[in-house]
Image 1: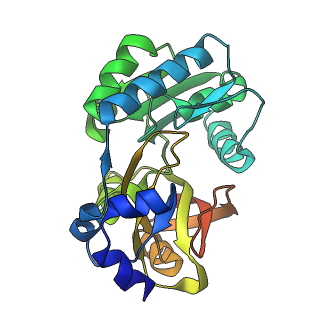
Image 2 (image 1 turned 135 degrees about the vertical axis):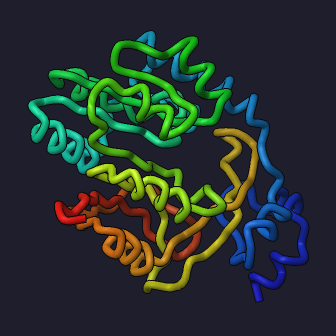
Length: 267
């Protein structure tokens, strides 16, 4: 009944009645988009850029979705995975952070990452973020690219891993991106901060209304069936090395998790 109501009540009314959260169980991406208000991409870019500039200048410790944090907070499971990969490559790490904004994850963990013998943190993002990143945030370790292939062609060292942190659920065809990555036989794939349905229910397509403290906007967002998700990797030649819970929460039955996959030697 609730889902039926959502399909006939305009999105702006939900935004009025409920300021943030996830709603609906939509049949298609287009249907979910029609119940979304979208967002001002330029405004988000400027907010994120302004926040990260404060991080770069060490006024704040790190940023997430333009919100500044002033106390240390690490994703230890992700950090352990990165250090484990680097340990197998003589203390060097060369990674793609797909959808990594202007370096949020890098800056959050840089006190550990900067201790590596060599670090190349490559962010693949939309063109406006790449332009801003190249202008204001690139350094010896941090680089920005418009596509995975552009990064692979520019990298002077072998790419070891790709990080997908809180990004797959916002793509219309997330499995198409995963297949693109898998076809390039990147050894490690790290999935982080990704939502899954409880009790192994089918993929659920919702509309996420962003908390107004961050910015005003709403857009489609997936919650995946975990069995289907894991089977996709296993059938593509990847072994699950570890999984972990993340601190993200939603107002619908769900859990947010991370996974570390490694390409089988015979794949």
